[in-house]
Image (cartoon, rainbow, N blue to C red):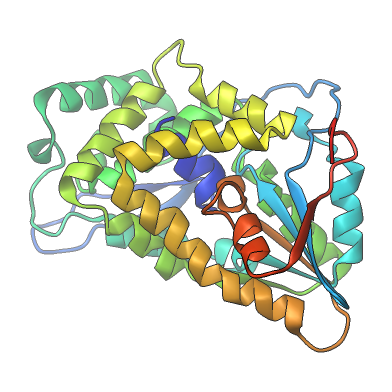
Length: 333
């Protein structure tokens, strides 16, 4: 499973934006303006609700619901399961990867773009193998009308690090497939919490998430971009497979398909993006389980953060908490 797909769909909660970088004189910073990436209109089709990746951790008077998100979805992925709606109704507060208020802030994309700017004055092409540069030029040419409408130019693309361009390629490819960040589980429940007056917060800040990506080493970044370009080629079915497994609630297949490749191909990135973040989040979840009063919490994070031996579910069980899956549609509890 390719890293760009995993980062955008089940590991990092980011708004769907591209960045417009205007040409500037040497030594000056370009003006970077967040622009929404247009999502092709796809008519909703009536479907059964996705089988949720939902668990409940208990500690006497407190419960924490753990919901595995897909950060970009389609209209026909809604409505969600009644199990999920019941968990939301029971929770007094919600906890996301990043606080919704910061996620919606226009300065987030600005800060991400500033972090992604090349600092040595060289062009992106100068860092890429010729074959990768050729694929990037072909990708831009194929998407030029749409990209330019959102403010992105071929010249502007040359100002950024490979990790950012790879992320952009991945997001554009996913929106081409009809997946919309405005329909992601995180956004859905952030809006629902605001409407219901339920407080929300985040495990980490945008600055911390940016550092995770900007901390990739140069070779890792080039590999990431090259694979992102491969993912958007016609006939690539990995994204559809991942989305289908999430809809089916197949935790085992998701873990095996997502984690194995990423741990092998990007061991350092996997450690930073998944393992270290889960370890940092665990005490926060425990504090919700051990707090005063009887308030319950709904945690909404990318699905990979809940799965396998590195996931929050097994880490909580290892600490002695009772954690059970909530899944009315599953063949087995």
